[in-house]
Length: 225
Image (tube, rainbow, N blue to C red):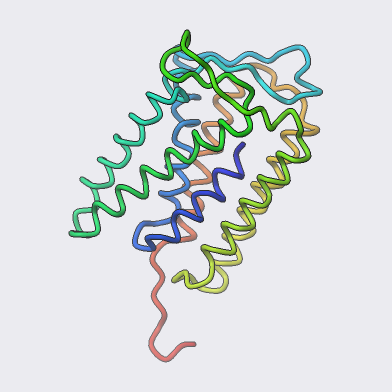
């Protein structure tokens, strides 16, 4: 799931407009960013099974990025970073930090929904969970699309963005959804795990930077409508 995490970030970001929604999207994708860094370092692993062209599901060993215990740790670290960084929010710092932590944990919750039982509770040898919605890909993609559309419908009304920026944000999110659908249905297997990790990490960085730029503070000129 990729687009679904973006949609969840938009829903959570609606609760505190003072934090750039790009930050919420990065938080919702943080566990994947950690995963791909750890894969490149050789500390976690991803394998491409022989049936990838029909399932589009790699096999993961990712206790440090997607294990329940470590995911909660990443929530705490992300929330603490926001609390320390956004000193200008004063009394609102705790609220912003808590929402960022929720965005991080939303990733684990959505992944439990779609992954087969491969998300460990603690370390790699512990009990693994996952409801396996990806086994019914049309339903999984419909749920993901619903989350994105719902996120846009909740976030865009009342956002302090120009009409053009709202349009661009919607276009970016819908393109992410389109590429997610293609990636889970017709995309060929990646040439290597390293290429998959590097391209996925770059995608996360570019997407979050782009959304952060689109959603940067917007001031309406005096006398304009």
